[in-house]
Image (cartoon, rainbow, N blue to C red; front, side, top):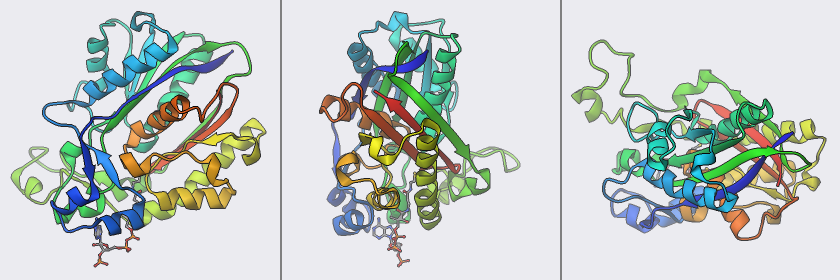
Length: 330
Ligand code: COA
């Protein structure tokens, strides 16, 4: 018995924000952003749109492509670092929007590796026979939580909004999830984080001084993230390949987390992954954290880059630090 990806879906909000648009908000340039990151534009939501609004569209498309009705789902797993509200989790809001009350709705808080953590959890529930059909969503709205002044430029140019989803089900045969691998090293938790609101103060979790200091915006040690990402992503991919007894040559497509083109290029060169086997979305969407991999999978399927029977490898690195990988026979 394996867990198979039965269908994929994604949804990107229509509002395109180019590097030149950012240059009108802060001291940055298209040239700097493209050269350092490979990002040309990203999507930002408008108005009161929430993360679960994006997730709902992606989920509907995934359910349709899987030919599964929402009522057949046994569980929802929702990976996000930008839920609609601090609590309850985004999974509960999505469950209500899908009209499937009663089934468990679990939030996963593992940032860029959230989707792969969700994939591993879903795989274990399905192979154990606990659940037959699981909806796994990765969705983010970063645009409402970025410092859009020059103070925040190192981070704000990197992230975008979006959602991706897969429907997973039990399957007898060679297709399905072959292996998943999850890691974390909390010693680096403060290298890419949002400091406030926090319990690590006496009194209220958020106050005027914290807001004035921008502690409610993400902060990052960019170089530290870069150095660790180019080390841990190849390690995680190698771990997955070894566990499945496969090599880079056996893989048909690599759908990696999209944080930065330079990181991806270094990962590919370390493992000697040919350019044509690497699927990229960073130019048009930036880093959408937990949504990046399911958006990539959906676009690869819909554009014919992933076909049934192909071997697909995926890996991610991000805040926590966390890193993860998976190998899937499509
Ligand atoms: N526009 C223009 N200048 C910027 C800028 C921006 N958006 N952001 C930062 N700068 C400036 C800095 O203030 C600094 O200026 P200084 O030299 O006067 O102090 C300079 O650019 C830093 O440039 P450089 O050293 O060339 O940057 P870098 O090569 O380290 O690249 C990152 C910076 C953020 C692109 C890089 O560290 C990175 O990609 N890190 C990983 C980030 C990531 O992927 N995060 C998500 C992981 S899931």
